[in-house]
Amino acid sequence: MNPNQQSVCPFVNMAQRLLGHPPASQEETRWRLLQAAVEVFAESGYHAATTREIARRAAVNLAAIHYHFGDKAALYREVFRLPFLTACNGFVSLDLARANLREGLLAFYTWLFPPGAEEDPMLRQFMRLHAREEAEPSGVLGDAVVQAYRANHEKMQALLCREFGLTAADAEVDRLCFCLAGLATVYFHGGRNAVESLAPQLVHGVPAREAMVARLVEYAQVLIAGEQERRRRA
Image (cartoon, rainbow, N blue to C red; front, side, top):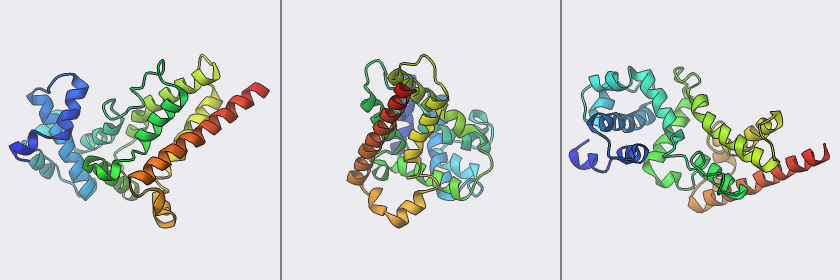
């Protein structure tokens, strides 16, 4: 990575949003390593990727990986946490006091199924990375992704509790939370290959993906209305 590339490093821009100020030298090194790691892991997979190549692309010495992350496995787990950070996640940062149900669902599905993903180089890298992990499990993630997703689950719980007039989530709220997430996950996890083979027009191009997000919001509203009706009759 040359100095001109460093000045426009998108992960450093993300760090600035998260920190509220330009990252210091050590912080900047950490974010450059994360960006390089996303690229290398997406291209090569976990097992074939080398820390030497990651350090080379980040234009730092190899010891920086150990200093900031410990080892390759810890770096890989941190990379998988990135899409869940507030700077990347408009749903978690949404103010529920100001947002109505449709706005909340739109933020959720836009984060989960971003219409511009295929046009954004870094989002494409994340998609490749997840596809590789799906096809060639690294064995090092453990529950890292589950824990990273926790904030999204809790936010959806809060949104549904508000709609149902509850002070705390019950089993039916949790059931519905996973159901709402499941509406979208088929398009980028285990079912993506089936979608690509049987109905690629659903996921290719910004208009198609925008339409899919709009439909996901509509489907979710129907499910939530059904649960509200079930609770009224109970």
